[in-house]
Length: 382
Image (tube, rainbow, N blue to C red; front, side):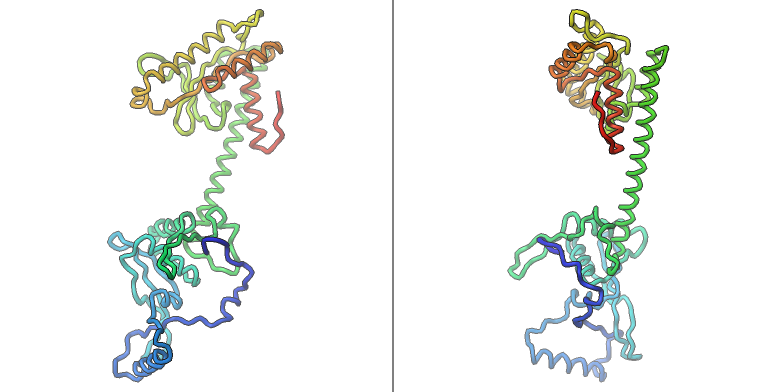
């Protein structure tokens, strides 16, 4: 732990104990003032002070050196640490372990610094009850992600961060170190997130494969059913990309327009879709856009113009329509000559940022390339 370079990791567990480590030893219960043990302790410390007048009194940090564990608690809405220590019982002359004192009225930064001191001394920190686990983990996350402030000898505050990044908790697990309860919670969370992400990725792949097969079968069938093709697109918004989760027919733009289709992103924002028949051509023999293509383009432009003109209304009543883009799906690529393909490319460049014109084959190729990308395979070019 520091603010520049990570600590060395080639120490053995035994290396930690080659040099003696001293800590404060409490007497429990406190001995009588006239007792022989109390007298011996007083004489001992008097000699130490005589040799070294600058010898400081024991601090909380010193007591943590001897702590067996810290118990994190919240009392009256404020974080508290119960310090469990090894103490000397003068009656039995044996070591006992008990909760000796509490650290109270701690600021968030004091909580984080206490956790760091406990971590540095291999003192485990446990939540007092199960429902406090989340609060303790949150403080531990803050240490890893945001760090904490400490003052140096000159009084200047320096920002420190733990060198163990949250995303590497499992990779950095050291077999000669005992992970703290908070770290165990983070490991569990990391595993749950990884399982969830893999499960989500698996569902995306499965849905995308089904959508591709369904669209391909609809387009290559002997008897084409345009209604079936449009139902396929409506059922499978993932064909437009993994960022889309729903295609909504007849989505209203206030009281003025009704879009044929709204394409909903996972974030909740809507884009615009105009779906035309796959049998429609895009260009005439003379190279001009067909009436079907012009109609689709005008539809998109009208909707975009409405969204811009009624931006205040949209923000109030349709907050999820924010600078939408449009898609037009029309026709087949096999009906396009090389000149038509170039015309389509130039048209898309001209309307870039406003809408994009896709043939059904383009949409299918995009979906197949996305599938290959997710599977780590080579992307095919049309």
